[in-house]
Image 1 (spheres, helix red, strand yellow):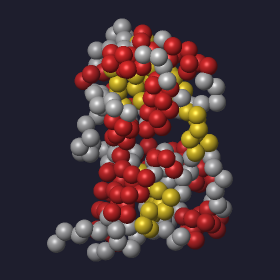
Image 2 (cartoon, rainbow, N blue to C red; image 1 turned 90 degrees about the vertical axis):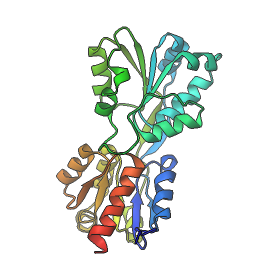
Image 3 (cartoon, helix red, strand yellow; image 1 turned 30 degrees about the vertical axis):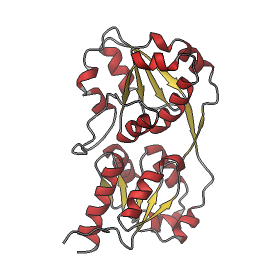
Image 4 (cartoon, rainbow, N blue to C red; image 1 turned 135 degrees about the horizontal axis):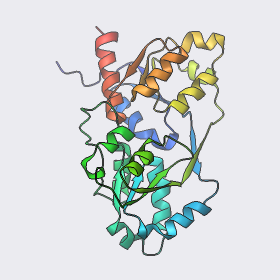
Length: 265
């Protein structure tokens, strides 16, 4: 018999930034669980947009724009669409995105032709390595590439494209900050599991813990869509860490498997 609500009775913490949390929260609720929103990071526009504006003024000279995250899509596309002749520029610019959330966000802006890893969720992760494996990014010699991202981040994608002969610039279109949170408010909800989608957010969660709250949080099952995040959690002391497949659907599948195999059997 197929269980239509496999997460029934379970409270799952969603730590994505608030603007990105709705899709995963809805999927958890549809599966019978209760999503608890506890956004570990806040997203803001870039503090200094002078460099971004300079890059956008010459956007027509770029071959490819890569969006690292849904936030990069939101702030990057808003900036692009403010340009005169934006539609014409977008019609000639190749667009790429790393994960299904970013692809979904681009579609909301009317961008449907996107270079991206396949979203069949058979693969473990959506990251720079997966993006670099795409056939469209192998022969990029002579290309000018603009990578839309937040403040900081991994350099692997840009460095590898440079090695392949491309010229790469980074367009910082948003910044992250740590919101004031009280771990006791989360504990009062009596959650059953936690999802974490970035190493930065994981570190902030750990910073909130004292010796007493560590005894409650660290044994709690934690789910991450990338082995890099999962490994960081283990090093910090989490005792039950599951690496799921990529994206919200990967996280949901991991939660359902845990609920059906470890909790209810």
